[in-house]
Amino acid sequence: MGLVFVVLFFLFCFIGPLVYSTDQTHTLLDQVNQSPSGAHWLGTDAVGHDELGRLMYGGKVSLIVGLAAGVLATVIGTLWGATAGYAGGWIDAFMMRVVDAGIAIPALFILLVVSAITTPGLSGLVVILGLVSWLVPSRLVRAETLTLKNRDYVLTLRAIGGTHGRAILRHILPNSVSTVIVAATFQIADAILLVAYVSYLGLGVQPPQTDWGGMLSAGLTAAYSGYWWLILPPGLAIIVVVWAFNAIGDGLRDAFDVRGRG
Image (cartoon, rainbow, N blue to C red; front, side):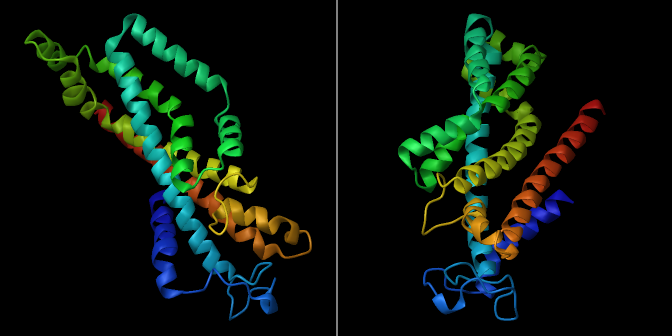
C-alpha cells in the first residue's frame, strides 16, 4: 500500500503539471484567498497562486530533496558502518563513539543552526540533510558487517591475500544490500519530514521556490481566518508521503527477515 501512494504522489508531482498547468510566478491580486472551485480546485493563496499547482510544484521539491538527502545519508552511513565493523578494534570503537556523539545531538537542531547561518540552496540543503542523517544507517550496517566479516567467503578472500577494500566492496556491501535498502526508505521519510520542518520555520527552501513545509508556513496565518485550504492539502501530503515511505521500509524489512529465516 505504501508503494502505491509513493507512485501516485510521484505521478501527481511530476506528471500532474503537464496536465494541470498553472503560472506560479505571477501574482494575481484579484484572485487572492479564493476557496476551492471549478477554476481553482484547491483554491488560491494570499497572492493568487493556484494551490493545486503549488502543491504539485512544492511536492516535486520535497520529493527531490528528500530522496537525494536520504540516499546521500544512506551512502555515507553505509560506508562508515561497513568500515567500522570490518576494521574492528580501536578503529571501530573510535568511529562508533563519533556516531554516538552525533546521535546525542538532535539532527533537527543541527539542521536549524546550519540553515540559519548559511541559508543554503536546494543542493546545499540536500548536503546538510545528508550529513546530519547518516548516523542510524551506519549503526545498522556496522551490525550487519560484524556478522558478515567472519563468513567463510570473506575469510577465504583474506587468506589468499585479498585487500580489505576488496572484501568490503565485493562481499560485505553486496550482502548488506537488504539492510541498506530498508535504511534508505526510512531515511527518505525522515529527510522529507526534516526539510518540511525547516521550511516551515523559514530556513529551508527559499522563495520563489517552495515545498510543502513552506506552503504550511505561508498558509498558517490565513488559516486562522478560515482559509483552511491553504494548510490542509500540504499537511496531508506530508503525513501521507512520510507514512508511505515508512510503510515501504516496514514491508521490505519483514520480507527480508522472512527470506533470511528461510
